[in-house]
Amino acid sequence: MTLLRYLTLLALATWLGSLIFFPLVAQTSFSVLPSTHLAGLVVRSSLLKLHWIAFLSGTIFLASSLLYNRVAHGSLRLFNLSAMLVVIMLALTAISQFRIIPRMDAIRSGTQEISQLAPDDPIRREFDTLHAWSTRLEETVLVLGLIALYSTVRRISVPRS
Image (cartoon, rainbow, N blue to C red; front, side, top):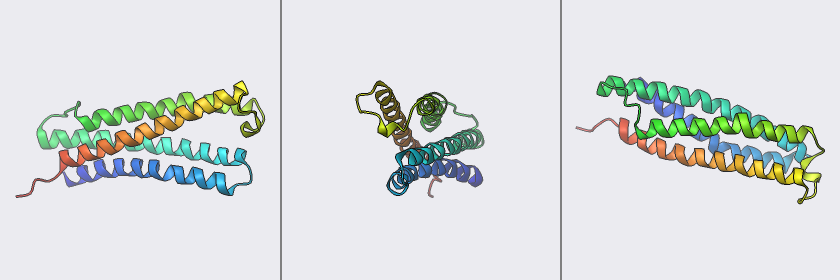
């Protein structure tokens, strides 16, 4: 059971750590690279990798958490708070990965550098709106993940004698 608790917490900690580190990568990219276009490409690539870390971590979390419940409590307890939050986190990550990022990519490929467009340009406004949604989704996933971590630690803590 110690291994299952470890895997559950490691998966969630890896995902949350990646989410916390990602804004630092983004900020550094935009402050160090010679153009916002190059920085955007680095951030996009990093975000895609972050999402695959999320999918793997979420799957490991759910599998080890449900198996832990089965061993410790005799049932899977599918609807515990942390499992439900992780499912929501995975859904939000999938929306970002498979809906928002491809739309942003299509805009990028069909125009010049986004930062060179006027702020009131419809293409720029659409890109900025998608970027705002992407940011909101990542922030929501982080908050839900912190709640899931707290809930998980409470649920699987070893009782003290």
